[in-house]
Structures are given as structure tokens and as C-alpha cells.
Image (cartoon, rainbow, N blue to C red; front, side, top):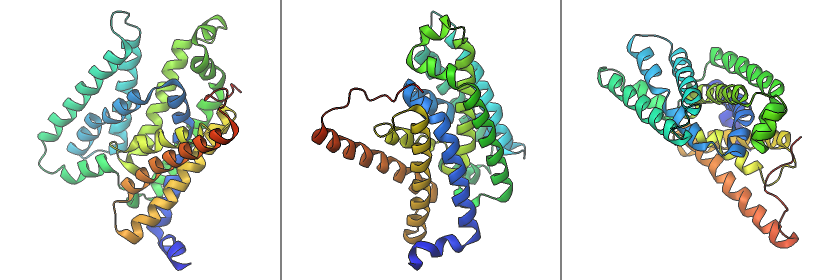
Length: 284
């Protein structure tokens, strides 16, 4: 059993595992709503929209996390503002912000001669470089994400299942949507150091999508999603150690693989027991 335990006896792999577990929990809280509301494109746009802030932080010797947070705030405010413009569809606004922020980031990167290593880590992650300070920040991010999820659960439910009813119940759907965008931004900022922005959807989307056929409630999707993400992190680090592959990419690839396995197993179950009445969990 040394092949199973030996990698996790190394300190930096232990930190990587804990970092992946914390990120899996954060992504489960945000990613569940992304999957239920069909916001995958928005998640992709926001993850790539972090590039300008990260590039500026690297260019001026600042903290990359602070730069990522700044870009996430800009993206969240931009998506919220454009979503209130009736003449522009939400997808159009998101697409324009996506291209605009990504273009600005590339322009900033082109002005730096020493950003190649930082850019590689930004795009593909550097989970094995997670330090103790990163774990503390991820722990704080998880606490914030949990608080937002608990306080906003009723409003998020109404948005996901019946936005018109949310308005009649006085739940302020626009404010709830903005808070949900902030939660998504928090998850992306927390995740980019682990798997990079190109692969962040692997932990944000794949685990909740894998959990969806098996959970009976939204909270069940979140719990099962966190378990799937943790499994992908553990298995990805193990495979990466033995096969000498990129750790973040391996974690993301395993998360996506678990999604396909889950839906294949769900299809076989439905074939034997009959189709389910709905693919959506109950509003709890």
C-alpha cells in the first residue's frame, strides 16, 4: 500500500491535498448554483476575466490573489450592470466582458518580459506550491462562502427554480443574483491557484454535475459535490505523483472523468428502474 500513502507523506503534497479539499468545498457551494442555473459560460468568462488583475499584480510585484480579487469585483459589477440593460442580452454582455478583460490581460502580459512562469501558473495552476498561508486564506474563503450560502439559500433557491416567485416573495432577485455572482467570483479566485483559470471549471462544474443525478436535494448536491471534488483531488495528486504529470490538470481531468462515470452509472440505473421524474433536486 506504499503506492497509495507514500506521496502524502511529503509535506508539500499534504498541503496540496488540504488545499484541494478546501477548494472542493468552496466550489461545491458555488458550483451547485452554477449548474442548476446553467451559468457555465459565465463561470468560464469570469475565470478568464481574472487575467488583467493578476497580470498587473505580477507586473508591479504585488500579490496575485489581490489582483485576482480586483478583477473578480470588476467582472461581477460589469455582469450585474449589463444584466440590467434590456437592449443587451445577458450572454452578449458576458461575452463582451470576457473578450474585453482577456484582451486587456494579454496586452498587459505583452508589456512584461518576465511573466511567462507566472502566466503558466495562472493558466494551469500550481497546486504543489500551496503554502500554509494559502491554506489559511482558503479556510477563510470557505467560511465566507458558507455564510453567504446559508444566508442566501432561500433567495438562491427561488432564483434557480422560479425567479418570478422570488420577486413576489420580496426576495430581491437582482440583489440575490449579484450576491451569487460574488460567491462565484470567490470560488474562482480560490480555485485558480489550484487548477488554473483554464481548468477551473473542472472543479467548479464537474463535481456538482456528477452529483446531480444522485442527490435528492440542493444541499445533497453540495455535499456529494464536495466529496467528488475531494476524490478528484486525492486521485489526481496520486496519479500525478506516480506518472509525473501536471498535478492541477490531472485533478481537473479526473473530476471530469468522474462526471462521465456518474452519468453513465445513472443511465444504467434508470434503464433498470425506469426514468426519474426530474433531473433536478428538490428545493429544500
